[in-house]
Each structure stands twice: as structure tokens, then as C-alpha cells.
Image 1: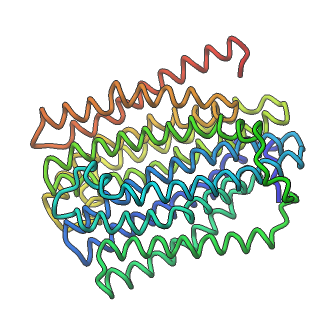
Image 2 (image 1 turned 135 degrees about the vertical axis):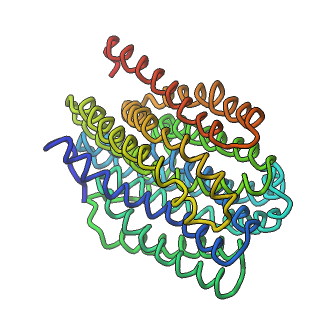
Length: 442
């Protein structure tokens, strides 16, 4: 069913839409965290490092797919807001055709380059075999990851953020069970983590396809809608590609930082890998705000009303409040949180240092994430791409590199690079927002 996001309380709409989205992200993040937790219980630091590096590569690929799919969510949102059901069907059909081709090409290319990718990551020698096995299995499952995110983007564009939550909940539960079977029972190590994830994703897609057949979406998809149309694809990609590149560059910066840390040794590599998983969890609220703002604002823009800017303001207040609370709390519980994933005292010590500075990024990033969703809804996702590139090139990577070289006994200064980079993004977003408002382009 379509859900009208153009009426009623803005704050209530944000919470009702973002909460299922948050839970979906939570469950998806739990995927990787469960892999890391379970592998840490049954295997050593080498296997933990293999899964953390491999899952980081997979996360980068996944967020880039989600970024492109965001173009679908926004375009569907606008057509739903404008009550144009035929246009909605065309957007959905073109999305299916586009992503089928994309997933096939991506799978072939990634499987061919799996060994160079492992080398580029500067994977510690003890973890090379496990990382290679993990990535090979996960790369083979790219079509399934793509299918899930296509279906989710369509539902969210229709205003339904609950159904994707149910799909990923099924996958997450299955993944945890399979992890214990493959890792704990059969002792497959990193390969077991990858097998569990891939098979769980398969079941999730099957459940989603069954739901589509039974759910009354109000949209009738015809064979002609699957025929690629230049204008429709241009609109989807015009919004999706900048978002995808933005997310890709962010993940590349994480990977570059991982490479820098991997060169410091196995303990530092494991510490940063664990912290990245924790950070991906606390970033669920800012990420949910980005998606909620883009979907809600898109419908309101399509309907031609003035509620989009108010949606942005509410999202910023929510994400900043959450980020501040988490950042302060983490200063006191960092050892405990990192210790959930490892019993190695040195890894806990280094990870605690890293997360206590890095965690401030959650509060600051919540602001530019909300702006990114807003710009995306207006079809100006290039602004999000710009501020992230500037942040990464000017601050995040250089800051992490020099901190790694100058402070060899601690990871705390390296963690400061992320919030510093986000601060620059907020400044760029603020300037762009005021400029476009004055020119009446928002």
C-alpha cells in the first residue's frame, strides 16, 4: 500500500517512517556484527581480521548499490506525491531492468579481481587466505544483495518502510543460526561467515518476492514498463549515481584508513575493524534520517507543498540529540563495548582509544546526512557528493595518515579525523543551503 507522507505531523511522519528504516539498518548491521562476534568466539585474531576486512569491502559495495537505488526511492516518492501511478510503474520497471544488468556485470568483475582487492587492502599475511575465501563467496552473492535493495527502495518510495524491515529480520535470524552452524559446528572459519550471510540473503529475497505477490501496492507493472527508457533511467541515475559515489568515497576513505592501520600490525587492524562495526551500528540513526528525509521530502515536493524544509529541521534535531548522547556515553563504556567482540586485552585497549575520539562523528555527521537527504529529494545529490569528496580528500585521509605516523602508540588521534571531516561537510552543506534558498532553487 502507498502511504501518504504529505499530510499530518511532520515529526510523527519522520518517526513512523524512520523507525522501521532504523530497525532495518540495525538488523543489516547486526549481520556483520554477528559474523564478527561469532568468529571471535571460535577463532583467533587472524580470522577476526579476515572477516572485518572482507565485510568492510562488502559494506562499501552494498552502500554504493543502495546509493543508486536511492534514485528509485526519490523518483517513486515524487510520482506518488503527484498521484502519477503510470509513471510509478515505469520507474519500477526500469529499475528492475537496470539492476539486473548491473548485478551481473558487478559479480563477474569482482570475482575476477578478488585477489588484487585482498592485496590492495594490505591484508596481514595471517588473514589473506580467510579474507580471499570470504570475499569470493560474498561476491558470488552480489545479485541477491542487489535484489533485496531494489525491492526495499521500491517499497520505501511508496512510503512503506516496514516491509523491508521484515525481510531483513528474516535474513538476520537465519544468518545468526547459520553462523553458529558453519563457524561453531563445522569450523569453516571466515568461509562459514560468508556462507551464512549469502544463504540468509537468499532466503530474504525469496520472502520479499512472496510478499510482493501478496501485497496490494496499488501499482500494476506491465512488460512494457521493463523496457529501458532514456529519460527515466537518466532521472534515476542522475540522483542515484552522485549518492552512490558519495557513499563509495566514504567507504574508500574507511578502506584507506584500514590499509594505513593494517600496516601497523595485526592488533591495530583488529581494533579498527571492530570499531568500524560498532560505528556502523551507532550511525544507524543518521543514516535513517537521510533516508527518511529523502523519501518524505520527495513526496512533499511532488505534491507541491512547503513541508520539505521543516522535515529537514526535525531530522537535524533528532540526529544531533542522539549523537551527543552516544558520544558522551561512549567515553565511559568504550572498554566494555570493544570487549564484547574480543578477549585480547591489547585489541580492547587500542579499540577503546580509537572509538572515544571517532564517536563524535555520529553527532556531526547527523547534520550533513540530513542535508544530503534533503538535497537528494530535490535532485541535487551532486552537493552531497561534493562535500563528501572535500571532506575525504582534505581532512579524513590526510588526518588519519599523519596521525598514524606521528602517534605510533595510540589510535586516539586517528579517530579525530572523522569528526573533523564531517565538520567541513556541515559547513559546505550550510553554505549550499543558504545560497540555493536565496536563489529560490529549493
